[in-house]
Image 1 (cartoon, one colour):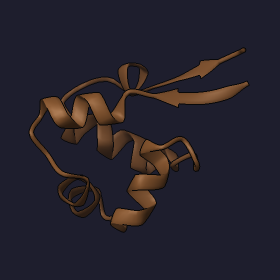
Image 2 (tube, rainbow, N blue to C red; image 1 turned 180 degrees about the vertical axis):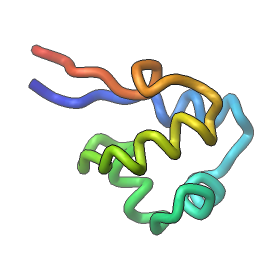
Image 3 (cartoon, helix red, strand yellow; image 1 turned 135 degrees about the vertical axis):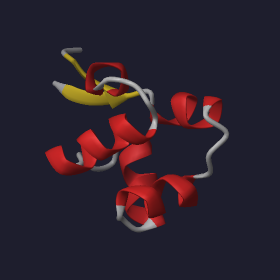
Image 4 (cartoon, rainbow, N blue to C red; image 1 turned 30 degrees about the horizontal axis):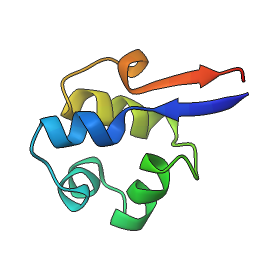
Length: 67
């Protein structure tokens, strides 16, 4: 089972850069890039801050892919 996300699409729709998002949620740009690429799984705190910043739900950002 893998964690998938829509971060890139939602971030671009909000006209934000990776650096903008990272700064706003208090993580490094590289940490954010790794989350967006699915290379790392963020903490609950980070997920909640991302959903708030991007004005969406956690479920719209992340889901489990059982393939």
